[in-house]
Length: 396
Image (cartoon, rainbow, N blue to C red; front, side, top):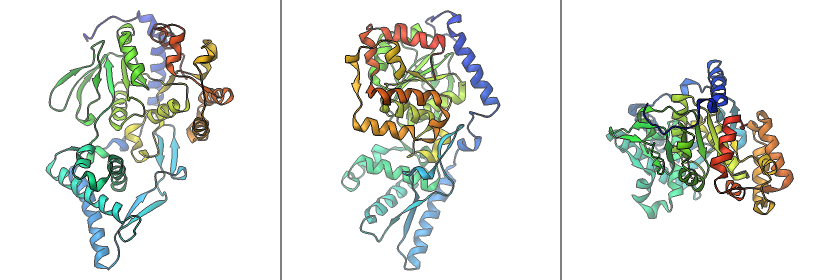
């Protein structure tokens, strides 16, 4: 297809092609493919029926002179999580729950807010219209208090109904960006091209509505930080490494960015790599893309991409590249707690190379930002570091 600028010679991509072949072989044997059941779309009538069942339970409780209660699965405890290589973190089938009681001073307001948002969702689904989380918050800012309250309740409702959030007709405003060898049709028929070299395209708000996605990309690079992403754009990385795609979630990725990365993987099965800071926060962000998060574990099948590999910045790169010590940052107590937490997670047991890198960080008690590479040369990241990693298979 005619996206062109020309990138490296074909021989540059040989190791990438070998990696892609191994990923495809793993898919054929079922080791890294999510079960199909996880991506089944939920009809509007099913969502309405689920909400009606909840309301019927409330009416039944009131008829018995009992205080109505919402029972919500507890997503903040590791004992309620299980790990599968092909899916990542997901909730166990019989996990502990918490009760939101209508007659308890501690939870009565939260009960009322859940009920209010349930009624709003019902109207949205019934009329086949959509609203953003921000729209819902602004219907009554004083009542909700802050946006986080709304976000948490929507996730609770999604988990309680066992319905993907997009099936609730609630969209979140995307903060992620895309650049490179990709075009697609949005739901309204608008053709979007991400091939501009110096600018990026916002991740769409309705990933489910995208059609006719087209790419020749050899790989997808997920960049942790917007500043690094913009620097790579300024260095014309997408042209120099063409054909490729870059995505950033600008830190911790929002739902739409994760859905978008998942969609690209399911459609094209191209190698995916992460470029994150060599610190516990960067590793955590990489883990969210690859294995998911506790808070969204009930929707892991739709969000995780276990095929993702860690391209950089590796803690071992710091010594290997002689990155100046004055550019390194000591780990804080919070960093060390985060690192210890990650090392104890179930998926690290199956990643000995990841564990080794994190142990290097724990031993040195130092971290480094990607920007530390600029002390070697201002364009070292785009001119040397990433091309060498991609050409010679420098990922884990």
